[in-house]
Image (cartoon, rainbow, N blue to C red):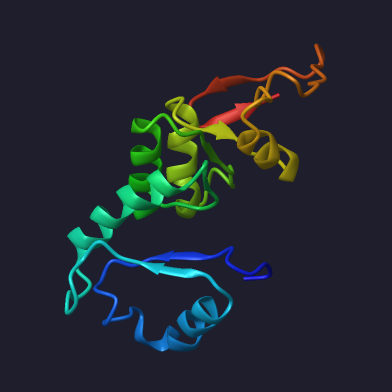
Length: 157
């Protein structure tokens, strides 16, 4: 909300039933700054699981790219990423510790080739810049001496 009109909140409820209820001040700030509250649901619609999944389609369609920062194995963020991928939008994910359940979804997106790996802010900028090749125009220093092989659940150098 730093820039007037720069925030769009996509709701999984009717516009008269803001959710979560504790965020009324946030919704007011979005409106006052010239942002938008958007919903495809009729007034009176309560939040339900399927409405959040349905809302994800709109999130993916409105976004130039989707970056998943943290997602568990069954996270709703994976649904947004899948919707974005189906629409041909760029998808990226930030990897986390292999031992963290909150990183499992990001790792799966990267492993399955749905998402590009994000290592820094420049990766996100490149992802949004349609004229730049996301990973092809970044230099990568490969070291022949640092190789690893996967044996069981451990990585060995």
